[in-house]
Length: 193
Image (cartoon, rainbow, N blue to C red):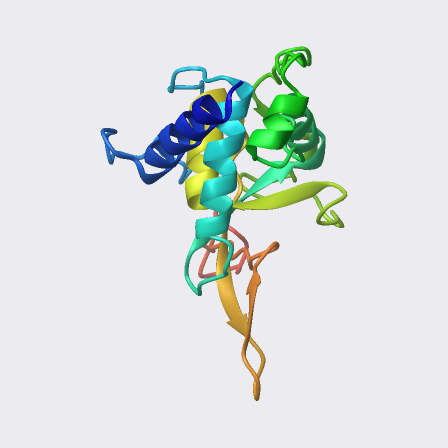
C-alpha cells in the first residue's frame, strides 16, 4: 500500500469509529447473555484493526458506571493474529508488509465465550483469570466486534469504585447475585411454583 492509501484507510477507519454516517442504534440488545449473529458488513483485517485501535485509544480510561464486556482469550488472540494487531500503523510498516496478505490467517468465527460461562445466566465460571482466560473491552469496542462477528454468551460488567479512604476504579468481574424466592409462610420452605 502507498502511504497515501494507508492514510486514507486510517481516516476512513476513524470515521467509522466515530460512527459518522452510521445508525446510533446499538448493535444488539446485550442486556441478556444469549448468542446473536453478526449484523455489520465484513471489513478488511487492517480496517478492523484501525477502528479498534482508535476506539481503544479513545476509551482506554475506566469511568465509574460504564460497562465493559468480557471476551474469551482464545478468540481475542485469534482476532489479533488475523488483523495483525501488533503491526504499527505507519506508512513504513505498511510498505514492509506490502506483499503480506493480511487475509493469510483465517478470519475467526463468532465470538465464542461459551468456555467462560458459569452455571447461571450472565455468570462467569469461578476462578477465571484476566489476560489468561478472558480480556475486557469497552462498550464501543464490544459493539464493533459483536457487530462484525456476533457470538456469545455476552458478559457485561460495570466499572465500580472500591476502597474506603482512597477510591479506586475496577471492573466488577463477579458482581453479587441475589436470588429472591417466595416462601411458604407456615413452613418457611421455598415455594415451588
